[in-house]
Length: 390
Image (cartoon, rainbow, N blue to C red; front, side, top):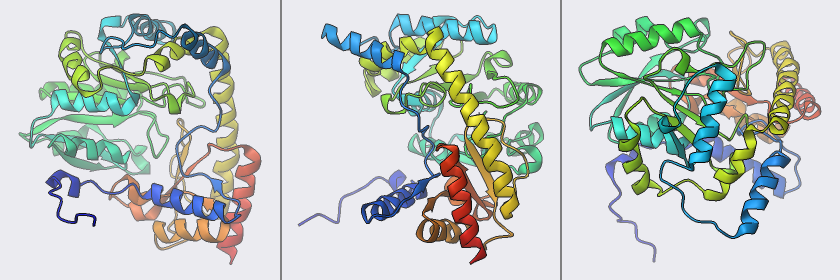
């Protein structure tokens, strides 16, 4: 018989479920029963891996020489990432500061493991991506949430950081573009946040995994404003390599050796096949594909945003990045979970309830991902309208 007395750690009981995965499970059940479900819940681009990346992986696999790389990643890939910062942002980032990781989650794990002692406090906005706070807990840290609303683009302010800082505060973690809101941190605001954290002897961690997916505003990097920040990035979103599980971490000068020790023990190294494939992600042919897909996401946003507003969803600040709309549902439903389940059961539309992203007014919001084609987005709007009228 299965045991029921296993001595799980205390931290495990503090890790909340990812509610969207429950909706995904239900959507799969409905699909298995023959229902057509429009997926707007999971943050995964619907485009396949660009062909030049697949070709690079195939060529490498044909050699049969698939072995471990350095714990910091292949030198050639670290150099390619450094050139990307130079070409795109005009920054001189030494390849030695770049750590290639198993996804952006691996990058965040390394940063938190290197920086967090038991009881340390990390400040982060609310709403934010849920895994951020749970990884802090996994390393025995604590999170102090900074309530953030549409008036401040769902991003923390320097005044909030000042007010929330305490003796145990280790630093601030932000994301630009943000999940779930798609909002950006303006360079001047980021500079003010970095200066405030630096004055207190803290550390700034910036999640940039949606970098490149911006609309009407040029992509940027926190490294232009705060060279001493830990910056997380990924090949998943802009580069279209979700299932390859590859990301990177840019660390301040002089930190790479300490991070390497952790990486060697945590993962040995990121996937060798994925690293060789990613070398092609920066080629001119691939960059053209990435930009064409960014334009398509922009077109999708421009269709979905006014359509949701016409149905009564509130969007206090238009998303300028990523591929999400964080919508206020107060005029339509009393609770995000109720509405999310109603949409999937009655409309065949899967969206993410706000409770996944924090506590501040979370039940008043729902997240829609525009990671499916315009025809499907328009069909989803029609279905939602039918449910709301009924």
